[in-house]
Image 1 (spheres, rainbow over the protein chains, first blue to last red):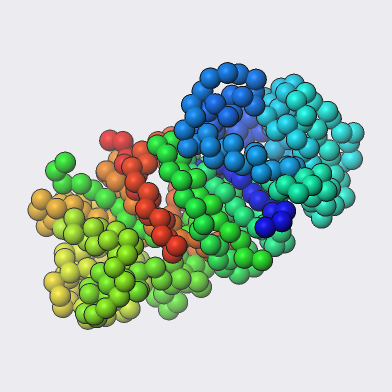
Image 2 (cartoon, rainbow over the protein chains, first blue to last red):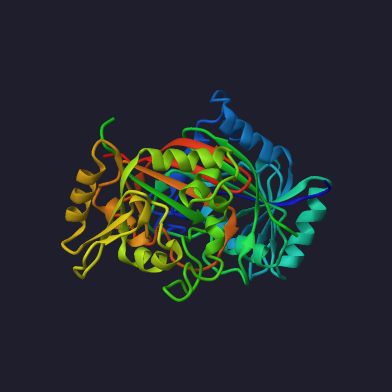
Length: 206
Length: 206
């Protein structure tokens, strides 16, 4: 297969990846934190945060698989700003993270192998750095909506995995808010269901 | 279980039930017809349109199940206006259909058992008439987005089935466009996947 460029993100049934009024103050917005509840009890999530125990169900396997195949992460500045405080001294990534931003800034090294490198000279540059850092593993775009839409529009993604949570949030940041130039057909390649979340994987035609 | 109030609708991955510029002239809008392609080859769909042959896969079973448990249909005026011509003399419903509208109008009787009754005195009245017509079978809200959102907001739905098509349309009518008063938790009760479409069933708490 070679190195893949993937997106991996949690979305409500009505299409939101945060609740209303998200931001540095309010985190993922009203009800937004609920989107990620499916993660918190998982053994594979707890292990990444230094805790023992947790469940080892299919949700845990899906998460473990996503991390195991990923060598570097690409994210938007806003996701970093909202996440930095809650992620703490030992963020759950444990790999190089490249943050697309408008202002140059020194890299930040956290515990557990997570590094944040800020890239101010565009998406292509951020992607190239992430690709190099990932080696023969994949690059994962973890959000937010803006960078994911940019990657889709530029035809950069090979695969999208959406963790669909059965909740209607009503407002917030929509994952798909900007029209593609034309309808874009994806190929549904895998569905894994659990009571908490439905994991939908799609291949993007290149 | 008793009589259930269900919604059953096809949606793109980015949340649209029509493409851009839908209307009486352009039908389901640009790319919108694509949403329903999963239906056209199915034996259970073809039979409803008086044709033989077709596939009898899981998609066909899902469609057959939806019709078999439904005794009456509730739809919005706009869906009727867009659908009337393409549905032809023998629409695929073969049961009483109640159309929520603002103008009183005589009922229309088509071939094959489909009747359209226009209800101008509100959603509650339309629902009551549909419930009576359905007998001990379920009532299905088949669209569009507006009436489905009204039913959700009024707490009238027991179940929602979404046929999720792996396409990004970019624009059109969004199924979930109006904020619920608060985040609404659904219960994911069934997922059936096929290459063409993922059938997601949810129970709505009452």
